[in-house]
Amino acid sequence: MLRGTVFAALTGICLALPFPAQSYDSLNFSIAGPDEETLTPSLRAASILAQLEQDEDKVPQDVLAAAQGDYARLVEALYAQGYYSAVVRITLDGQEAATIPPFSVPKRIDKVRVRVEPGARFTFGKTQVAPINKRVPLPEGFAKGAPAQATVVRDTAQAAIEGWRSAGYAKAEIADQTITARHAAAKLDVALAVARGRQFRFGDVQVTSDSAVREARIRQIAGVPRGEVFDPVEVEDAAQRLRATGTFRSVTVTEAEEGGPDDTLDILIDVTDRKPRRFGFGAELSSSEGAMLSAFWLHRNLFGGAERFRVEGEVSQLGGAAIKPDYDVTARFEKPAVYGPDTMFFATTGLSYDDEPDYIDRSFNFGIGVTRAFSKQVSGEVGISYSRSNITDLYLPGDPTRLLTILSLPTAVTIDRRDDKLDPTEGLYLRAELEPFSIVNRGDSGGRYAFDIRGYRAFGADESVVLAGRLQLAGMFGPSAADAPPDYLLYSGGGGTVRGQPYQSLDVDYSGTRLGGRSFAGVSTEVRVDVTDSIGVVGFADAGYVGAESFPDGSGDWHAGAGLGIRYATPVGPIRFDVAGPVAGDTGEGVQIYIGIGQAF
Image (cartoon, rainbow, N blue to C red; front, side, top):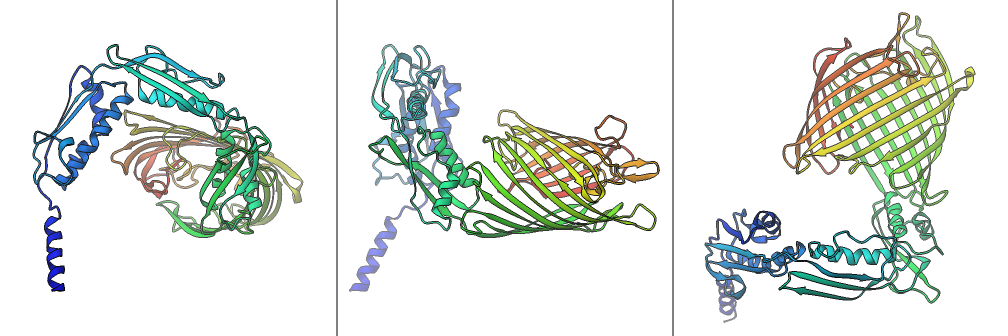
């Protein structure tokens, strides 16, 4: 009996389950009145029925659920544009969707029709919001006679609250609101009353979650200015500083629900740690420069204070034409919030072996320094570096060697206003470097400089075309090319300068001896066009200059290259495939191929 009862119950359940049935193949979506062209795109974008139209597997249950939900979505979209007298009708085979019980789904739906009568567009009548912080402007659209868009009302209320919060009134809120739609006159009257509450100062900073990072260090990195007037920007900056360490998977910084009796407001920090260790690898391929392989190991919290320690190794020019492999091993230690929340101490060291046509350089280096973020877009860096190099000059008879001990003071300023560091479409990037140096064991001194300027601009209705440009300037002053450290000399050609020209193929003739130049200038342009969401094509042209002088004056030589490329978007940046050839100069011939991750610049 029990088995029979279970079987009967299962049979009943199976029979009651909805089976797929044919649903509508098209949607009749109509809007009455003269505003049809302007309203149709936004209403279709808000409609689930419109999105479901292209779904081949739609069943009656899904269609009914979408139709009944579309009433609210369409009305909300109309309110957002100032239509408060709208009538929305949605019929399924002639029956109003709102009247169909959810447990009486039709077995078949053939015709779906959405009919919207938006009515008159309302404008603002009486508008009032008080009190307000006059130093923070309200949205311009909140004024008598302007289109009465619901989004403007919402933005005005938010702006009024944020205006007081920026002045320290952290618990400001809308205390009362009166919104009246006068349908006969198509006017919307809005009155908002703001309660600003007490002005607070930052109180204690409390870490509310468990973390492998010490609580004192979390507070130090966050840098909340205790005792100062509350500012929501400081709260967001504190969260951003913690995220920037890379130690935490998630960061939440909020103010306490209630303020203290002394007008202080505690700040609560909740963090979730990332796994402390990580390793990775990368590769690039060029037909002239060969392959580059790299790998790294990273510890995100070395001593419990969110310190980062990274060891990286790289082998380049593997299989390159007429060039031998180079090797490089580096280590970098970073400690955030050492001299304040916006500073970071770093120490670097490394060993390298560079086997180039003109020289072989075996070197060791060590350096320390500090970086500081002056704003979200501007940062600076200053340090001191020591290096010792054993150099074999292959261009001289007998391959003589020389030992160089160099002490330098590298400095840099970076302005980064790009919208996306991995695949920018808008903005500007500028980095300026200056490094005075002294060759201690030879009593010689000089300096080197570098400028890297990049700009991006998107075009088209969907911004699918991006024009990108880059200008590079670099030079060295002080010692002659023969006496200078060879890695301070400058060349052109290859993936980082002029694609289509062989790697470091442009140098300088010093009375019959060819070495790198003491100045360099490079110009690159790209036109990037998105073909699909994940695939794009690129046309590019590069030109490079190398001269014997310390500052480019046109007395040196130029060469250029151009080509086409394909980009495939991934979460870690686009995969790049470029094919280029020379278009000016006599430093190379044939086609060069470049494969890597990330845009060329």
